[in-house]
Every structure is written in C-alpha cells, then in structure tokens.
Length: 276
Image (cartoon, rainbow, N blue to C red; front, side, top):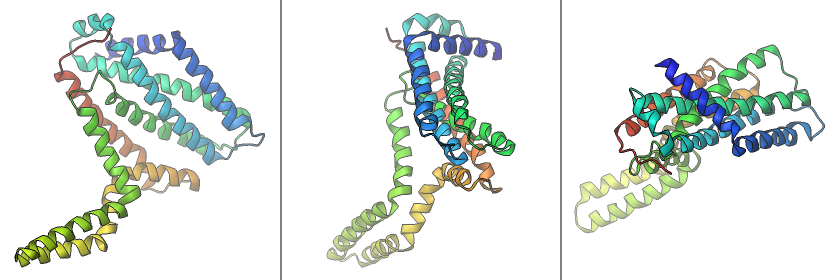
C-alpha cells in the first residue's frame, strides 16, 4: 500500500510542476521571496522569517493540493481509482503530493530568503521543520474538504462553517454573546407577558450571565480550537517555546487526523462523477 501511495504521489507531484501552472507557481514563489526578504535591504528578523515563510508554506500547500486534486479527479484518471484496492489510497496520494508540492515552494522561498541573512541560530533552525510541516499538513488536509473530490452534498459548507463559528467566537465573542443575550431577554419578556414567570426569570438570568461571565466563557471556549495557532505565533515572537506551546504542532496534527478521517469517509462513500 505504501509503495502505491508513494508512486502515485510522486507522479502527481511531478505532473504539477510540469504544467504551466506549476512553473508559474515557482516564479511567483521566487518573486515573493525577493519582495519580502531581499528587497528591503536589511536582514529580516528571525520571527518574521519564521512566521512569513510558515504562512506562505501553508497557503502554498492549500493551493497546490486543490490544484492536484482537480487534475486527479478527471475522467482520464478513472483507471487509477479502479485498480487501487481502496479509494483511501488515492486520497492519501493526492494529499501527500499536495504536501510535497507545498513544501517544495516553501523550501524555495526559505533558501532565497537566506540571501537576506537572517540571524538564525542552530536551535531556531531545528525548531522550524516541526512548525512548518505541521501547519502544512493541516492546510493540506483542510484543502481536501474544499475540493470536488471529497465534497459530498453540503459537506464543505458544514466544515468551513464550523471553522468560521470558532474563528468568529475567538475574534468577535463579545458581539455573539450580546446578540444571544438580546434574544434571551426578548424571550424572557414574552414569557413574562404570558405569566410564565419561572421560565421568564430563568431566561433573564441567562441574559445577565451572557453579558457578564458568559462573555469570557464563550470566547475562551470557542477560542480553544485556535489555541495552537496562537501558541505558535506567541512562541515565534518570543523566540522560545514553553512546555505547553511546544505541544501546539502536535495539536495541529490531531486536527489534521480528524479532518482526514472525515474526508476519507466522504470520499469512500460518495458516488464518483469525474470531471472532463
């Protein structure tokens, strides 16, 4: 199985850079590195080097995985799916090819950025691969849910809507809590008008809690999902990782595992309608 996955991944990885789009991505990556690391004329800070290239790698992996999945889902590749013992092998190969393509572009940018002479120590260099690779793996698996290959019915809407809810709860939890409090007060007034005082009083207490302790509680609860990203950002800026922050890449891999299992379930059970 591993040989089949690696062979398929190598084929799709090579095919992605033999196309005009792949060459264009290489050129754009080189331009990106020049503009963000060479053009300024001063050595980039280490945290800037870490975060910008890490963000670029995740974005590149997201784009390349979608591109490769689009090509792999064409009717000309139907023979691959028919000959493989499991569709999951094909999905794993597509994900691996997208990850390798994203890492290729990221490595190109990282090497060009070294011409700007960032003050990298050996310790910081050894910290980079786990951070960058974990973020790329998560971005690659997440991008699978945006492709026609994996999407089943409204699955992509559900997946990205949940992510938006957590993101909105992290950045705009106060707005959400106040809106929820307003709805609770409206219902409280309605039940008070109907003479149902126990329910009315209960809803009033909920409304007061939402604009008090609930404001912090909801924001912290929804923000837990994005803790690994905040931990990596804080550690990169601070220049070192605490014991808790060092677990952030592992949490990203757990997220990626859950999303890949979900994608595999969608892909294994859907009716295949290949594109032209």
